[in-house]
Image (cartoon, rainbow, N blue to C red; front, side, top):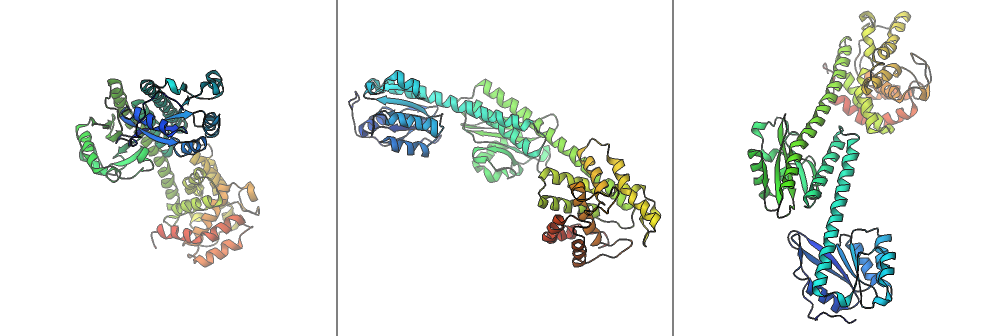
Amino acid sequence: MANDFLFADEPEEVSPSHSGSWKVLIVDDEPEVHAVTKLALSDFSFQGKNLEFISAYSGAEAKKMIEQHPDAAIMLLDVVMETDDAGLLVARYIREELHNHYVRIILRTGQPGQAPERQVIVNYDINDYKSKTELTAQKLFTVVMSSLRSYRDILSIDASRQGLEKIITASADLFSAHSMEQFIDGVLQQLTSILGCNDNALLVTSSLVAGNTHENQDPDQLVVFAGLGEFEHKEGQAVASVLDPTLMAAFHQALHSRSIVYRDNYLVAYCTSKFTHGSLLYVSGLPSQVNENQKRLIELFSQNVQIAYENVQLQHEIEDTQREIVYRLSEAVEQRSIETGNHVKRVAFICYDLAKAYGLSDTEAEKLMFASPLHDVGKVGIPDGILNKPMKLQEHEWEVMKTHSSIGYEILKNSKRAIIQAGAIIARDHHEKWDGTGYPAGKAGEDIHIYGRIAAIADVYDALRHRRCYKSAWTQEAAMEKIISESGKQFEPALVEILKSRVDKIEAILQKYPDEDE
């Protein structure tokens, strides 16, 4: 096909620069068109990046190339190749089948009448339509420059959208550990998008390192809290193990100067708050000039991200305090019995293991684990003479002992806290039996709450395996034999089978938390 370019030998393809490159896919069935295009754009540069050329000589080959290079910024696409509409079919394939709406498609044709411009613009999602005779070197430069700007802006908008989506999603449950990491990831993604840099960014903190105070912070002890790009999935790892050693000097400087350190193409920002210090933000791939608005944005991030992190830490502290109070209260109840030890802890961990194996969610299993120590809280209302009697209880004494389930439920039932509410259910139901012969209500089967059914088998197995005032500790074999004999009677058969299959893990819990006299 005729064109106005001066032809020359095909130059070697431009290699990507150290800061990356823009991929340009040239699709044309005439090799000289490829050569001239590369020659005309050989010294092209945009935002510090050169062009990387990829060639395809047919519509079929173009489809394969765009599949292999979905990050191509521009496609210079010939219309007439193996068929009169080969280029148009490629454009439709990219948009409608690959759903790639990022690459800027510039149609080039030597036969404008073959595919009328108005019709093509209306029917196909292309970004420009040029006759090859009008694409001089200067006009080619102009159309590539405008297309790259459009491509850059589309990527920036999409990155902002993804970042905002992460923030909105995380905001629904901001105070969970996973959600906080997602929240920070979203903010990092928004930040890198607005700064116009690449996606390599991370937030590191010493708050996760026990005993690390403001006075003795050491960058070598910092760990990754959240990361993007090459730092994704590096959470919890030491910074020194994921960063190039040459970058650590900037971390030292930012930490000790308590400021933002800018380098040629990256920054390290010291993050502080009213209460603590210790986080550092690292962002790479910065543009050559960081303007004042961008610097202000970085300052705002560094000032506020630590506050957000500390709020989550405070929430965790409150939750830990609540759980510790539950344990302390449960242990106080246990102290009324002659036997002392780690019964409530063992039951808690056994409950969690059985709950997960039964199919409960992580949230439900954790709630059961933290609430199960309250299963016998009603024993505070049982007289010592009955509670610690070393021989079999008389009938009227047994009736008093059975009231501890109802007493525990009454103590806990009006709480608005999820763990305490679960504790009330467990206290009420953990002496009910699968066959309906238990107490206090004679419930049967699935009418017994799953928390109560799991806590019951965990409580009995641990009680059998340890000494009580009225009996000696049973062997593992004897305890399992008793549990199996009660399948379908006291215990749900499915839970008995789970306990049988996991008895080694249950025994490991018993070994880890022995009674004081063992």
